Image 1 (cartoon, rainbow, N blue to C red):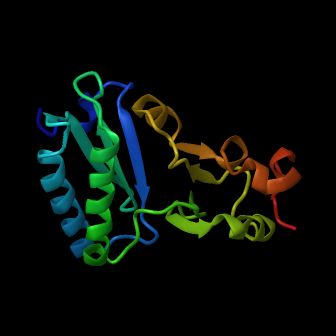
Image 2 (image 1 turned 90 degrees about the vertical axis):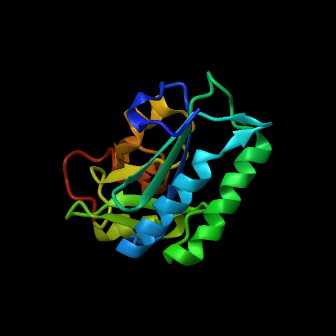
Length: 175
């Protein structure tokens, strides 16, 4: 099966979310989308073509989904995807593969990237508040991605890093 429009895949589809450590340039975006499109058009698992879709969100998140009702991605095919993305990183000037990053929208709604270790400092300074939108790049199915990719910090996976500040009433979370 070919690459299909993202919104046509069922909620049960397997999803991978790759967050870029920095915004992509126009040239980087073009190189990424071209490389991903070429790979996905021929992506197979044990010789069976996969029904796949991809999208780039906020110039930071590459989202790839596979309709597993047709044929599911296997360990080897997933490894191949990761190798392709790692190979594209020098061309796009950003890192996509690797964890440990926290993505959030700043006060101007611009996507920012930080490390988990920096979150408490950002919370203390007011850079991340309980209402800051945080992205969950660990989601693995499309339904969860559609309903929960963006959540307020106090409802997100970073809540434990925020201490008791996430429980405070509507006050600013600084110091």
